[in-house]
Length: 518
Image (tube, rainbow, N blue to C red; front, side, top):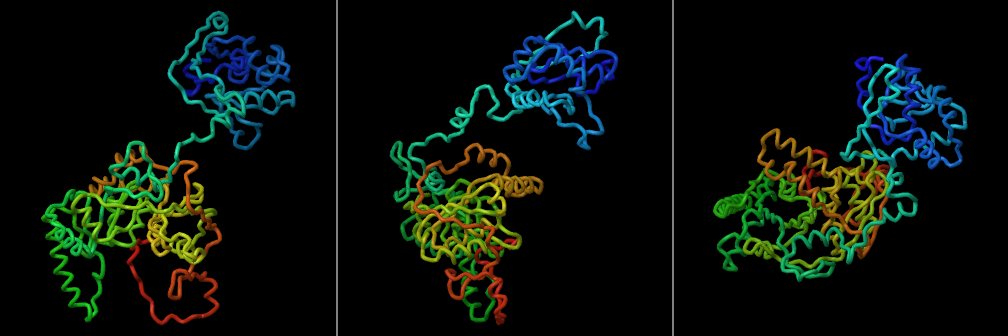
């Protein structure tokens, strides 16, 4: 067989070890592939093959004659065949780099086939070259080519040589023991706390001085500015830390509000002038809701502590940032010193199970939580949301932002989702879009920053202490209606349909989010 006529994929073979008799396999391939034999350059002999096979299947009688008979009797075949897709063949030995198929054969080979399949990943990979030579030259020409480069093992962890038994496998999968384990909330606070004693680990209940990653103020920026000036401050300590975003009451055109609105316009002009003077980024009325600006423009970032002088600051937890509200005097402190103080609250974990049904949104999830756990279970707590990968993948990032935003109505001080693959994919898409459009956002949302996030990704330690643990099955939820008069009252929409309640007036509000998906 002319080597130039050989399929491209079998000229250079990455053969995982040499556990199958190469010479015998060569004979079988020659019978089904042509008159010339294929010379597989090798370093193992048939006796070594016998030893390996016996170690795999001790109850299997291995003899050279048996191997020769079975291999020559179409145990193996090389190359694609149309019938493969029809299920004619018993199984496919995908562990060989060229296509090798097992044909149905007698039951005496069952244990051998099973042993080969289970043990192939345990062997060290070597590279062999497939060549075509006249049969007369193949008997004495034997060369070996080995590769010292590390190669990926396509095998289960339990099949690797360094894990010879189940007991060691289980032991190897136990999570590393962490001294004084921390929650995700505590880890983020630890990262942004200043002046900690050496070796100190932040825990719930601690009072800490923090230097937040970012601080946002909205229409209350001017009252904060007055407090800033009243304490004798004249210069912003770190203007890159601050964001001014005007977003409240900017569309109220009622006659009774026009005078106040004109006053706010004057104040906004003063805010913009103040921002320009101190080099602080300023977003005027109409650009967007402040919290949405912080997320969409990349000021709030996963794994950071981001604060704002607004009660719905927990929204940043939807992207894995610890967001919490601060009062105006604390905001003035951040302006003047880049620092403020915080007491780490008790931390509650809410575990989601099931899958969020179609037509059910994040708003329904948080309204259901407020109605089901309506005895102040999480009052003044920091919440960490968790669940299986499948469960969390059913909650889009926009819905996570809504859930985190309304943890304020739930009574909590923050609501934090994990930094998972779904969030990373969401940011990857934004980074690509920003780069394509040459947007100013690209300086804050870009692939380099995402890579750095992955390299230093924070997760809660196994065994971390939570003050409370709550569970909710998302699969049982449907659209919910809050009220009347309280978010602690939540009723499934399907229960209200039969009551035929008239709607006298409807409002479309945008205080908590303005997402197209909402």
